[in-house]
Image (cartoon, rainbow, N blue to C red; front, side, top):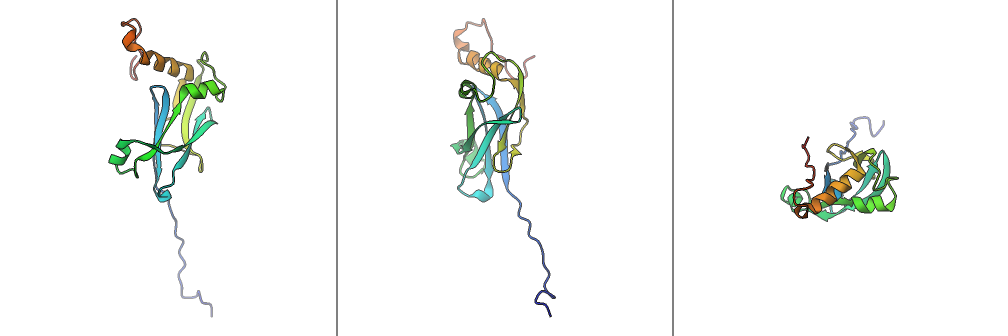
Length: 152
């Protein structure tokens, strides 16, 4: 007689609690956040991918009060990739005068899972120039106006 004859075996499937958002481009950086509930106080490593290739990565551990207020862990789950730093490193294969359209997305490194939110399809040089014009818009006397999302 088997010890298991009267025992029902059931598989327990454990799902990951992942909440995230790829915020996109703001100012001179690409940012977002990711929180994996079961990791507790550990942070998630996020990669920035351009045209499917990993160009840099970091731990999502920056504080954002809006995350804390929304109950996203302790609020230390944001990341920010500096676009000028990425371009100057040569990791993208792009330069400041390269206006080729690229697809940019953020993924969780351990699972290669894209974060929630749409990937960007943009020219890296255009993003950087838009940020630079935005930084100096008060000094340009209306001669150049930075594009805002939704402008046509």
